[in-house]
Image 1: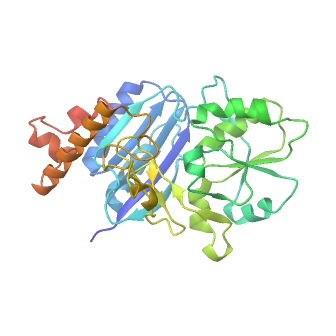
Image 2: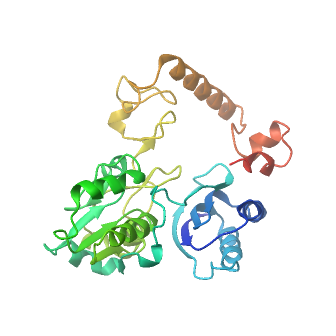
Length: 319
C-alpha cells in the first residue's frame, strides 16, 4: 500500500486576484492528484493537502514559485489513506479568523524551537497559554498550560482583555496545532503592550515530530482538521472518531452513550439538535452506507462523475 503524505502549510504574504489564484491552485491540485482544503485571503494561504509524494511535492513546488511564497514551510505526517474526499480552495477574509483588523504578523512573538520548549515549560516565570479551542484542549495539552476555554479563535481577544495584564504577565509563551494561530495571537498581544511574547515554532505537530516520546511533556492526542480527527505522538491516527452531525471529536465512551446515533447525533450535540434535523442526518447516513455497500462514492470526484457533473472540479470550485 502506498503511504499518503499529509502536508500542513501556511504563509502570511499579500495575495491579490484571489479568484484567479483559486482557479489556478485548484487546477494544480487536481492535476497532481492531491486532495485537501486550502484557504486563500488577502493576507496569505493556509491549509492541509494530502496525496502521493510526487503530487504533494508538485503542489508545494508550484506554490513556492509564486511571489511571496518562496519561503513557504510545510509540516508532514503520514497515513495509510488520504484523510480528505476532495480538493477545495476557499476564499476567506482571513486565513485564520481572529476578527481583529490590522494585526501585523511581522511583529509576532519570537519562535521557540521544539527542542527548547520543555525548558520553557519548566520556567515558573513563564505563563504558557494554549491558543486552541476547548474541544481541542480537552483531547490533549501540555502540562500546566492555561486553557482560555474558547469556542472559536475569534474569542481570544476577549480572553486577553479579561485575563491578561501587560504589567503583570510577562513573559508569555503560546502554542497551537501548527503555528498559524500563534502568529496572530502573539502579534496581537505585542500590539497590546506585551513585550516578551514567544511561540512554539511549528506548533504541536512540530513538537511531536521532533521531541522523543520519552522526553515529551505532551499529554493526550492532538486534534487535526481532517478525517484522522486526532493524531498520537507518532503522528499516526489517534483513538478519536468524529460526529458527522456536529463535527466534534468523539471517544469510544461517547459512542456508547444512548445519545449517540451514527451520523445523526452525539452527546455533544443531541440536546441542541432538533429531532427533524437528526432525522435528516440519519437519512444521509443511511444513503452513505448504501452507497458504500454498492461500491459507490457518496461524495468526492467519483460521486460527482457518477452524477453526471462533468469534471469534478466544477462542483468543488464553489468552495
